[in-house]
Image (tube, helix red, strand yellow):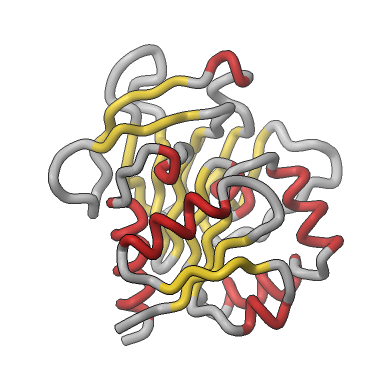
Length: 201
């Protein structure tokens, strides 16, 4: 079954996410308008700057329509800033910053530090087969806590941040602190495409 996955095309690695999705058998399309959102089965929210994406969602009249689709059960995957936007609660946000919500978790913005504190490590993610994947963190958030509705599927395994939660799933929603689209390893996208297919019954 071919599923159509939108990539929110307001900021971030839109092309890279689209390529990874298509590698895993999905049809990937950019989403900037409500009519484009209406035509997709699922949505990827790329990294970037979460406060900027929040403002752009409003400028493009997409904030409420995306939130309504999420509440109606649309699958979504958020990486880095996308994780923040899909969190129910955010620490370190700017005044007035809102999230789309959907995942019962508390996320800390820029938890791993500034751009200079970006790092890479190998991680095991529940649902991703064939061994650990190489994860790239760029000014990344981490998850301070998850509520009972959400499930931790990945943690940093070594180094000063060992134990920090960096991947969470809640039903058809998947979020990661890291950027799988930049490594050429498409297994996180494979997992998400399967989530979308499962949601289609």
